Image (cartoon, rainbow, N blue to C red; front, side, top):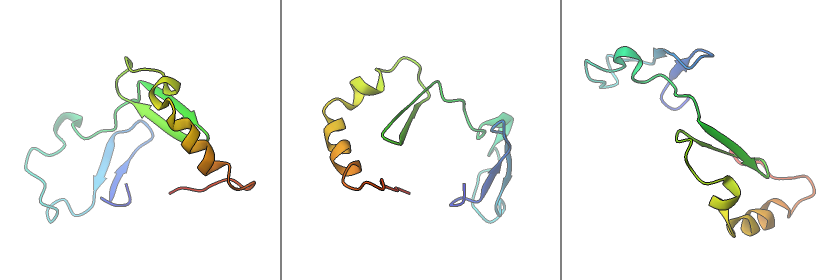
Length: 86
């Protein structure tokens, strides 16, 4: 995470926190992997936008987005070169 200065390994374990003594984290910070990344239970994409949920029991992305897909389509399809969102 460039914003917080946290570094994770490929399995999601938190390896390093930038300036932990100066950042104001409490003493029990990151005990027993409390701040490791969690596996995404459900993952889908639409028009290049990525959607993930930690809960496997959520509606399909198509159902969740509903009519919003029309707005996304209008925005994304404006340029033949696509769209870049950061």
